[in-house]
Each structure stands twice: as structure tokens, then as C-alpha cells.
Image 1: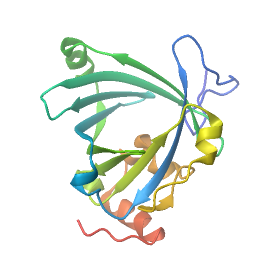
Image 2: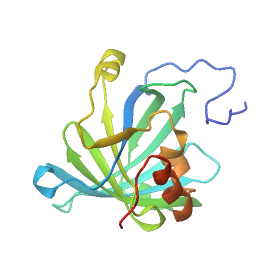
Image 3: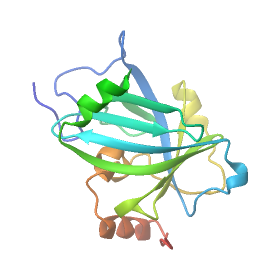
Image 4: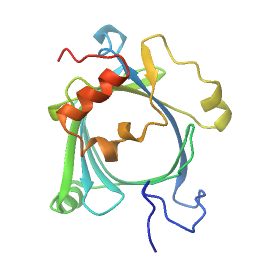
Length: 188
């Protein structure tokens, strides 16, 4: 079995099953992080993209000390629009997470702010200055009819450079160039 350049499986129909669900989301660039007064929840996220796979190991730290550990597989669909592909999540114990975290991976970190209707990711490290908002949907109709809030500067749903699997491999110089293409300048 081979994978195409978007990570999808060639010759296979992508459809939901017993374990996978369709992921519908739209992504937007924001000029700056949200005002803290508008944030309902925040969490610090470390994503480890396991080398040579479509798997992501996530550690989310919540302000109350709670921790969410999960393994995610994303199988993209190479078509434009809000339907991104299939997603499967498996929640892990700390021991399971630690075992999987020993595998080779590329890492990115961010803080996610819930600012309904968006989850807003403010990136750290080489991606510092990138602020991405995501909205998730239950149906295609919801995704198509969504009107983004005014703080959304540009939609990047169909720009694969702004997916986690690509961002984890991106240099600071590249991300600053991409932001400039969309008329944004990083002040961070």
C-alpha cells in the first residue's frame, strides 16, 4: 500500500467507519492572539508527529493540572473545503504515552485558547508569531455556511502549509514568509 503526497492512501476510498470519524474544520490566520477576557479555556499542547507515520502523539496540559494524552491518526482527503479527512483518537494512560513518546518524532508546541466559535492556536518556538484559528463542524452544511469572526484575517483551510504535519517541519523564515504572503507581519 502506498500513500499519496497528501498522506492519503492511494486506491482506497476514505469513509468513516467504526473507529474513524470525518473531520470537518476550517482554518484561519489571525493577526494576534485573542484578548484573555474572551478566552473560556486554555491549554498548553505539545504535539509529537511520529516519524514515517500519519500519527500524532498529543499532550495537553490544562490550567487545573489535568492532562490529556492521546494518539491521533489523520488520513487526509485531497479535496478542497472543510472536509479534511478521517480522524481517529485513542486516549492513553501516562505509561502508554511515555512508551510512545520514546519513538522518533518531530515536535511543535502551542497554547490553544477556546474563543467560541474558534479554537485559537498561538505557536511557540520557530513558529512564534503564527496565530491560527480553527472551527470544527458536525456537517458539511455547517462548514460551508460558517461566517468567520472579524478577527480572522485570511482563510487557509486549503493551504496545506498550515496543517500540523507540515508546520512541524517548517522553519521560522518560512512561516514569516507565509505570513507576509497573507499580508501579516509577526511582531513576536
